[in-house]
Image (cartoon, rainbow, N blue to C red; front, side, top):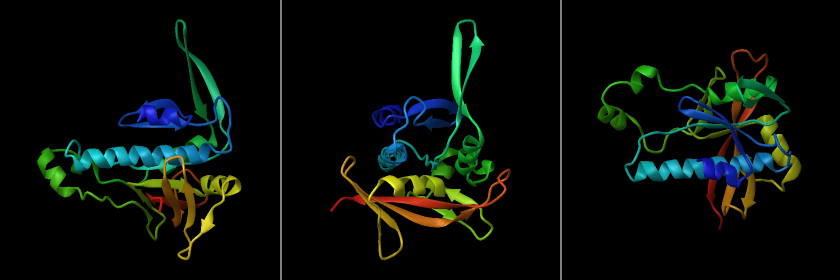
Amino acid sequence: FVPVVERFGGSVDKYLGDGMMVTWGTNRADPLDPLNAVRTAILCQESLRRKREEGRTFFKMGVAIHHGRVYLARFVAGPGELHSTVIGRNVNIAGRLSSAAKRPIEEDEGFFGALVEALPVAGRGVSVDSDGTLFNEGIAVSGDGVAQLEAHLALVRGDDGALEYEDEVIDRRILLRYAGDAKFKGVRSSFPVYAVEHLPRA
């Protein structure tokens, strides 16, 4: 995924177990950073889908995208080692968004063959249940991320209410569909979450 991240101007901030946190705008902010994050997410999801179809993996992943101001913190990690990371409220919100409800950990243990049988190829995308719990095996974008996209792109509202954008760079028709208002521990109020869908351009 890293070459795709770098192609669209992102930086890997850190690896977190089987995931990673990627930032845009820490060196130079660009109004299209949220779009570049969506482009990156789409291409990474497609890469993983191809590997599943080829039988090279059974893994699926959820991608979360949030937009907001953060603080860039630099700290000494050791002799001659300077590390940097982003901190602040919006990093915490992005973290909550990315820690969407997942399958119980017990289902990840045991014989791999049984696990493969239990995993549907298509996944369940992005949804928010009536309690405000977010499920994410697709690409979820916060309302703040969508607002930033709306401010800088010619988004068109389709008949079904989804926001659409024809992206020539990755040759996809991108749809942003409202999934619901998600609630997260440690965040006072719920906030809107959108699911990203994409199709080849006509």
